[in-house]
Length: 64
Image (spheres, rainbow, N blue to C red):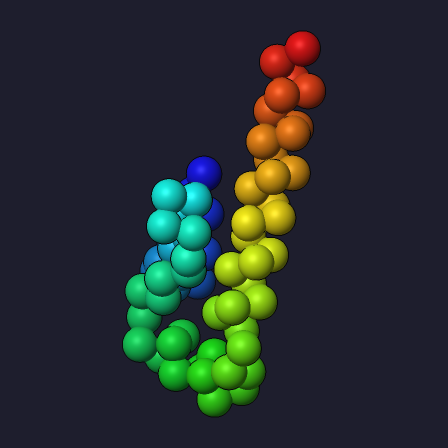
């Protein structure tokens, strides 16, 4: 499971279920997150793990 966040056609964040962490792809995004909300990456990582489980359940339902 992979999510990618884009802003104006530029990749700014990447989440992969294998690593189970968000990787910021732009320095300005990383800095803005640290300045505004130091817990952003932890909270969003947990949120993406939840999205992954919901997506997995939805795919299971569609397969039926």
